[in-house]
Length: 106
Image (cartoon, rainbow, N blue to C red; front, top):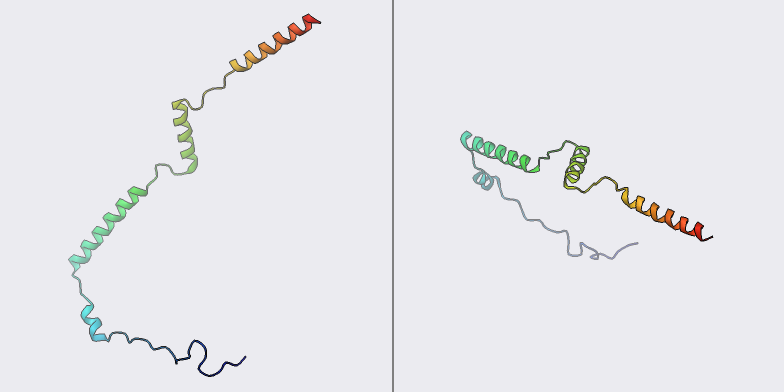
């Protein structure tokens, strides 16, 4: 397919770009830092990384340790009680009594 001249995205010609600043301006923007300033920045960066590391630190090395500790804590709070046999005993007693009464009626 042939497009007519002047059609399309470059109908007005190729786009123009703004020139970047010349080197003289860049040199004035560059600031030299002393060793003391660099060391102070490094110390501040190390302190920030230590604080971030402590904030993100986990007490458990694996998810298994976390789950075991979670279950241990819930057991201490009484969430996982031993199974109650009394409910089954009462149910069985009622069933046996009902069967005995049914056989006595026959």
